Figure 1 (cartoon, rainbow, N blue to C red):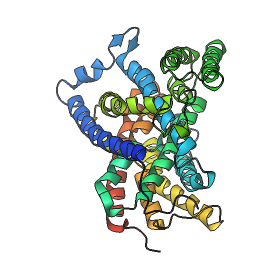
Figure 2 (figure 1 turned 90 degrees about the vertical axis):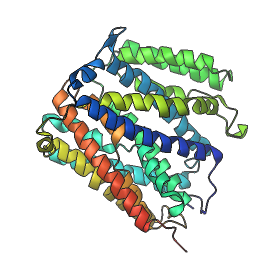
Figure 3 (figure 1 turned 30 degrees about the horizontal axis):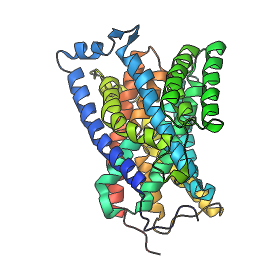
Length: 391
């Protein structure tokens, strides 16, 4: 069996996660609209320049994208750890279908962008259409309520989490310009020390891990590797135990603590900063550039095509099968929602074209357009065809 045959009862942990992501998606939409409006009024230049204000030697934008987003990636790492140990990814066969969906949804958009931009300065944007925004995707599913089967929500969460992990790997490997081996070795040494506290000394207090994580973040920042990677590494150093009833382990406690601050403070601030885009008179023309076309077609067509085709191949080959209440129309609908890139795509755009404000803004506009269309189409598709499959 690939994923539990359901009419499945979702766990309280999953329900809390789902509800948090749903509300976060709604708030992110509001912050995006507010930021775009503020950026394009008469005082818009002041709003945009506000995010470049220096604090402690770094701009506010730098603090948001390197420090606050490291906390976001810590939460992603904790969620991934839970899924691997006791969630939908804990059983290899259960994880296969969303794994194939994620691989298809990563490779196909990347190939589309690469084909259109190979050999050009915008080739570095290949990672932009790879990502899926969990908050917005789950927000769309939440609006559908009981019209869709529970296993579809689990499927989307699982493949979106794998998507995020892949995006983190892409950031670490492809968007690191220069590496200071000494600082990187120091960060890895701190990480290994924290793992030792967990595995050998069974230290269950959170404070040593948080202090060590802060030091690891600083060393990673100095190393040249993007500092958000430290958040994910820290997550896997923090003790987790499935036999604690999924309630008592430090990992679960920290995940519970971080959910609301990340959903209702960090991601909204990220949206306010990173969608502070001055919409130029030729913004529609910019959407026809190879980079923008690669982003839009990658998210709108590459995601559903890659997700559906690779899942179909996996099922046809007998490696896995669909849950009993899902049909291919559900998988295709999930693939359409996977085209909502937003947070991760915007984040990668800033890394891909560092210092090139015009290309970053054009990329962000392409991401916003594609995400809006993908969210609307995915919602309409599943509203019309999302009823549970009778077998």
